Length: 338
Image (cartoon, rainbow, N blue to C red; front, side, top):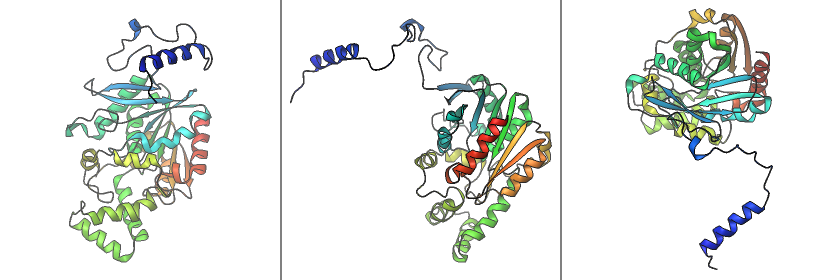
């Protein structure tokens, strides 16, 4: 059956005008064409589904942010990696907004929806710490809660040590206070989670620096990550997307070629002796199967001035997926207390 395109469009337009599809829109709710000019990054006068691009590195680049929910408690989420994306944190959407918490995602520079310049000088802890402050200013956040998971936890600690006057609270999820502590834990996990044969082969590949060997990658993805990173089967789509969008150049420069051998510029990072300087109310979160030792998170909660600790007995590194009831019970309780 053929359709006359002109007649179809005309009929559709009449139908839209004639058929109520919801509450009437107040006059002035939509912008005129003259009011759509924005700040060069974001158009004004139109609804953007919470998305706002923020200038960073003194305006040379821009990063993607998104607001969900509304409420007096505002949380900025720092994802892990380095070089991953916000996507694996999407479990937050099922809990925070409906609890009256205003949450903000952002993809760090070099990742996913943000600019991805090919400039190795940008991939440093100091530069990323300043980026968080640029994002805070761009979003107009003051007395907010900063949440950092994994590498984002490193970033959250660094930010708190320099800019804690802006913080209402701090959450450090699944991150120890030094690279050395992290490596001590992963060395133990390899022995616990692998057969003697697999462990010998993994150690041999690492000793040879053969991290790109398909056998090494298969062992990580099929035998280790499903136990210590995320224990849900299958993995949530958000986790798959985050892994697919990993910027490996950033990961290699800052972490290294492997989850178990840190050769990047974070290899000597250590803040155990400075945790006492963090005075804002702080929650640390650990999990039984995590690649970070939960005892380290417990210790950290006692070193900061106003610390509390949450433990996920069924969780791994992504406890917000594989131990949701426990994880969000603790997280929301803390957010109600700040």
